[in-house]
Amino acid sequence: MGSATQAEVSGAGGAKGDSHIVVSGLTHVYRPRHGRQVTALDDINLTVGNHEFVALLGPSGCGKSTLLYLIGGFLPVEKGSISVLGEPVREPGPDRGIVFQHFALFPWKTVRANVMYGLERKGLPKREAEARAAEMIAQVGLKGFEDSYPSQLSGGMRQRAAIARTLVLDPSTLLMDEPFGALDAQTRNLMQIELLALWRRSPKAVVFVTHDVHEAVYLADRVFVMSARPGRIKAVVSTGIDRSDREFVKSRAFVEKVDEIWHLVHDQPQGPR
Amino acid sequence: MAIDGLERAGERTPALVAVLNGAGRILLDYGSLIALVIVWEACARLQIVSPYLLPSFTNVLARIWAEIGDGTLLVNLADTLRRALLGFAIAVVAGVALGMLLARSVTAEWLVGPLVSLGFPLPKITFLPIFILWFGVYDTSKVIMVVCDAIFPVITATIAGAQGVERQIIWSARNLGARERDLWSTIILPAAAPQILSGIEVALPIALIIAVVGEMMLGGSGLGGAMMQSWRFADSVGVFAGLLELSVVGFILIRLMAAVRRRLLRWHAEAQPDLV
Image (cartoon, rainbow over the protein chains, first blue to last red):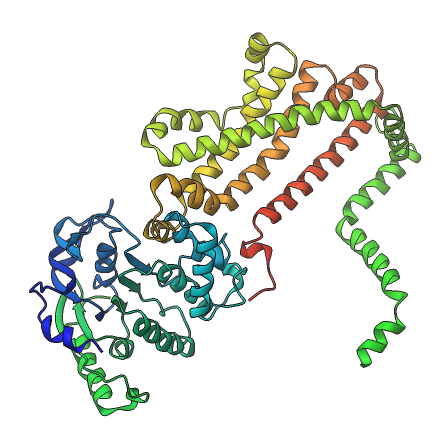
């Protein structure tokens, strides 16, 4: 999976012809109204290839979510640059779908209405929007819950709805902010499997933020290991996992990769928490 | 099967049980009110208090019955409700619009914000003489009084609701292609609805109170006006009848409002305690 792109964009910097996301020299400073300013991100350079699945891995406070929000266009880029498919990022857009940890569904809308929201904004005829929403809802396994409100669903089902709402617009980039962090272990594993399946069916560039090493190795082609205060990328590791083997989690290569990355994450001076 | 049979055997009893349960519930829920009425009636019957100061509950009920019969209740009720509800409706529409504007625009906040902060704690009744001067003693003044008092809780609740919408909800909408103008109608208004409705629920009894106060001070018809009329004629039964009528009207209005809230917020977790 994606091994061809990996070879070409193995470095953190160099923009290649088929690079999907290019971040260069990105520095982001939080200036709270009260208190000291914090350098959340310091000189970040990375590229993500077309159809590549990358994970941003690091402890809380390393700025990985901030980086994701910047790529999403939710925060203004002040120093450095971000471009997606050659276009500089200026504002949020449906080409870069995002999934949040706490779902951020519209609680006053049913699952169907949530999924249809983006299609309506595009001005799609109601009939067509309904058909596409129904198909997407079925794909994420929520058939039969179209008329439920988010408050009537379990956490896993809410995240399925949120994923459907994003994927129905067929974004070329998928940004995921610890999307399974709020789920129980069993549901999380199931969602990981299904996410990989969805991604294979309709490949796109995925940036997946997590603090779970196992999850990062499980899902991603490459893992960007970040350190905190200031947020920096301290290592880029190609996982090189062959996921065609269904039992790959038990393979020696997988276990060793998890171990390698675990040491990278934890091998840093422990700052005050 | 066993349960089936049981249900069939008890086919008659459920209705009876339901009635008894219902009666029990009413006793339980409104026990204090029922006790109050009993004490009231006893005090009046036993002449502990003179009937002029405290007419008996049954006499008051009889008066209300008579007022229903000759149509005066309906006329007075219609007058009071017209003033209260018209003022309430204006307060809701204008209050939500103004609250949204204040939450959204720095300029509007600069222009109107201080006025809202200044006006909220001010006893609006002090404006009554001015309103009488400007608008006379008829409906206009009374409705404006209602609007002035009822609009503040709506404005403040709307501002709080609109400013409290989760950042990621708005981000999601923007991510899905919502423009700035879409945001207000499709996201911020519904997301703020629980808080806005709380403000509206506060505004409703205020509207009724101010409508009655206005009638009492400016005269004319309506339940408040009728109470003052009775008082002038030393008709204490009439005064207490008005009091009772008003409390029932207020109770019904608040119940209706709560039902509207449940309907509008049926998506909200508060409306579905047993799910998940």
